[in-house]
Length: 269
Image (tube, rainbow, N blue to C red; front, side, top):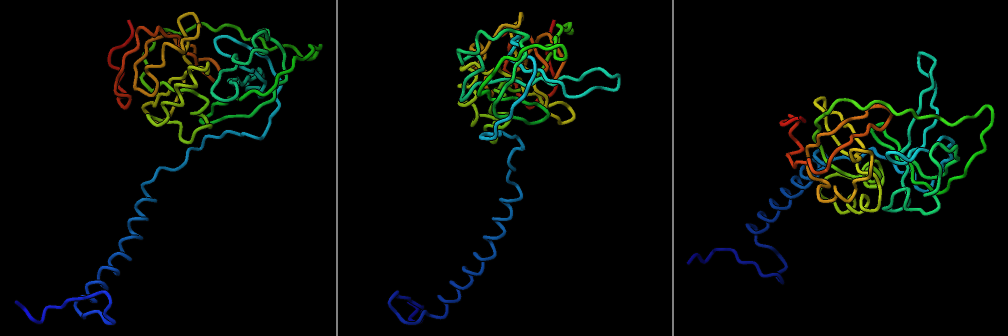
């Protein structure tokens, strides 16, 4: 047995030299390691989403109300190079995890009505929605007419791959409104009547959003709940007009896929 081996007892006034050196090395190493780990966490941490929900900041807009295939407010946002008016469509949702029509007093609002709408804006990636707080009908004057939204011809069948989610949380209420952690929130929003969307990453790395409706424009919220936040492939007919393209799909043809795969695979017949 080595009689010279150091042994330290906590109540001793001095630490043995060998033990003290080991403690100093450990503390110095820890002081160097902690900043490095902290820097790596900062570098590789995902930033906050740029999505915005202006809760508490009321905005008032005037425009034309439309209900089909989902509730919209259409407003003038200028004119194009040909001198024709450019329209912006704002998706309307209700307070909390409910759709616009969950508010009983709005159910009788006429399609094509001129309205003054007050609520909280929600926007991200060039898409805009609003949580509606109040709506008032306007009287039609000679200089102010409803915006007539002519039905556009629907394009040929398309195949899209992406993730089904809800636009309210995705655009700004949740940060981030993405993936499995967002699933419970998105399911409740869609079950509450908020229109579902398909979030698609294109080959350029850009994100596109498509509102989802049944083949005749009917709501299909309850039929999509089991697919929320999963990767899916949808075949349908696309109306690409306006700020919010609409994909008319038959839920019976939904197929689960790896949402990270951009190759569309099987296409529509």
